[in-house]
Length: 239
Image (cartoon, rainbow, N blue to C red; front, top):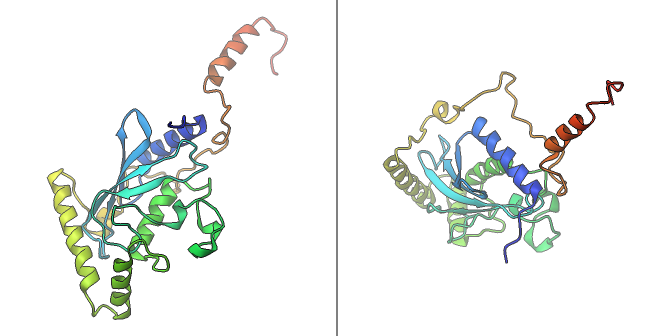
């Protein structure tokens, strides 16, 4: 039985999606898998220039729980990604998406895990960071982790790991071109945003009502009705 999404989850995702359309995260495209479902997104990651992933276009699905943002979403890559922190089935393993429980065996601190102040924007930025700096202490793909460490410790002399990544990036770029998507190859192209606020600041979301499940979505209508009913009290200019 599927849990019913909370009203706070619907509001949070609505505002976050709108924010990401108006102020995109550099290197990402996001869209809903179905316009009627806010809880499943398609995320596409452009490989950052001057990295092994340059030219790549990696698709993933992001699925949100019905009690978001109390619980973290999950991310599964659809494009093949050879990486220490990506399972064979494409599931991404990253601390920020793990529930904030105390698990000494994981090697993660509770503060490194999910908390409700995180959002899609911080998740996407963390994914880019993880691509370039894998966590090899608790790898999801042991073979990729061993290969990555061998390449890192050889100071670039062992090319098996980077060669696999570059082949995957080129294959992903070819798929993107079939879809008519232009993949940024330079830093200038990568950093272009759809809109830029004059202050240069990231958009701030109003988190005030996100966690109140009893919030009445028709509050504004109720307030208007109240004003009309009090219209005869001409002696009260202010409440």
